[in-house]
Length: 164
Image (cartoon, rainbow, N blue to C red; front, side, top):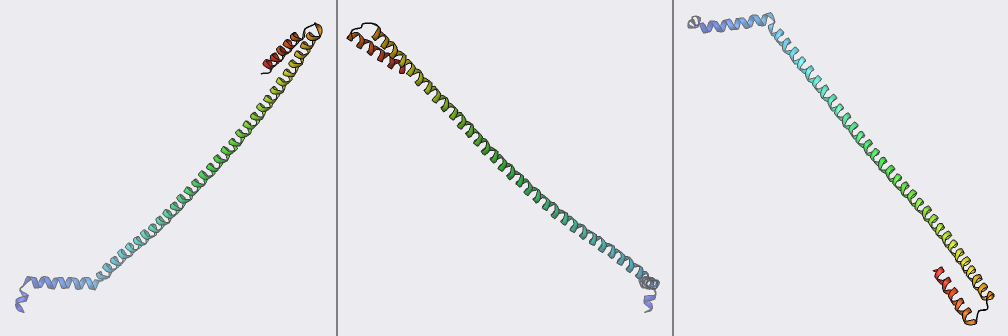
């Protein structure tokens, strides 16, 4: 064992053990433990804060996704409403056009009927005038029977031409 007393490694080991004994006696291990505990508590707090922030971010994301879905649904409702209004306006315009066409058709038919009535009246008046003229000629002059027949046929042909 005396060979150990001359060895420097032995004295270095003794010094190290002494140093640790003094440090342990002075309570340095408590300070180191407290520092490590404080550091662990700080890390735990940061982890809790990170977890809380993550949950808030997830809630915000869910809220934004919900708002996005609501906005998309509202946009779809607006589009549906616009389409139904456009369809209603189109149907209303078609009904109005059909009504105008019907009124114009009725007006045109009425004008045609008036024109036909006027033409028939004019034809009757013309036929009466021709008959009166023919009768006047027959009665006024002493026409022979062949002349009267010829004149009557000419009046009938003239009336046919004017009627057509």
